[in-house]
Image (cartoon, rainbow, N blue to C red; front, side, top):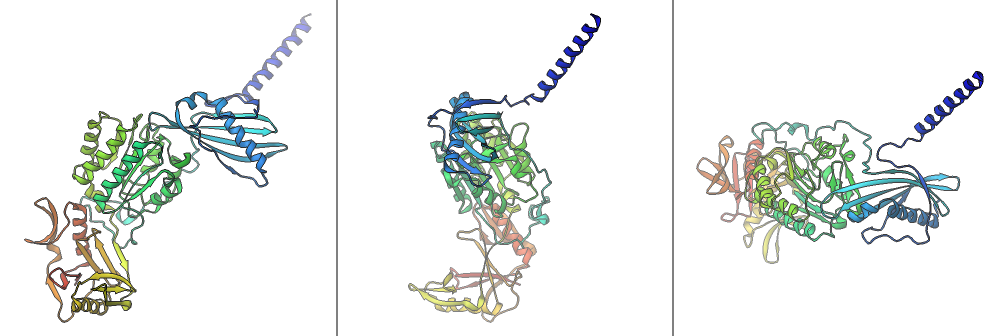
Length: 519
């Protein structure tokens, strides 16, 4: 009897051990639910808030009927597994990827982007499933999914010679950068179904145009991930970016639910559009713990990062954006004061964070300056009448307008050819107060008979505010007027000193059609 008890006890222990081992193998990690199998109904109805799903396949040979079945299963699982999220969401964007085959089964995954109805928040969920005929097998469900971070490299510095901006904001100005690429500022929103998002994006675009002369705007399907990433990576010209849309601590959402995640910024590839720009993300929790998106963007050295620190209400939070840019760019207030006042105006104090530089925008613009120049061939320059006005032309495109002054137009051509000028540069376009020319990247040197020039000492050139207007002056004599553009006035001073210009020259005074500087 004792022996039988011992054997029975041993079997019981063995069964318990096996059972424990089975339970351990079947354990579901946090955020996941156990697998299940379902019969696919003939008709799957989804709410109008569910956009048309996008599909891609990692394998060849998928038949149209198979692709349709995979998509149908994704819609069925959405309604079957995510009913609460469907009720709370203004828009749901499903994306399906066919992963492979295993016998008669097709393996797939679906990622659903849920955009909250009342705030600019977004959540992602992911399911992995198989289909075989009308049978659907849910293998894995992950709520609050975030794309995995696979690369965490420290990015190389953008424009190394000018990264460390010293107390003199233009001391490290690098003038040998290529002609700038992309817009000076960008206003975008993928939310073309939200009238206030479109309205305030247009208003902010208008403020950018007033401040910078021109800017970029992307709305709806134009505000897609490839277009935005191109500007963020390559936009050497950009100093301001306003994004209105949905987000969370890991990502911001663009057109058709395409997400730009923290992983996209954790790369050694430099983001020149981010470097030294002021960024304002009107998206929920894009400045909230664990700060993945913020930290990813900050690796690329924005001058200022402003983002939503909690649930941003649609409408009033967008108006905060508008007031911020108005105060900062058009009223010349500091960014810290502007953000604070803009939030108070809409009773949203504390809804946004600010990281980085919080002073006046002029420093931002000056620190990221690149020369605005056009190359040309002096041998193809000529003077000709165009619609009754004498112009200087370069291969058919006009460079200068001298009205009825034929002699001045011909004199300008002579100067270009004799100095061999091959680059026309501007500060403050349109209607640039400062134009200058260079010869293979250097200042023109020498003299030409009959030149109309004024000598000055470049060491004595400064930018000062006189009666509300920023001017470049030499002693008591002002040479250029930049209006409210403090940064451009300071840039003009540094350009004069960089090239060593000591002569300001004119062709066709008064109202000269050409100004140039030389040594």
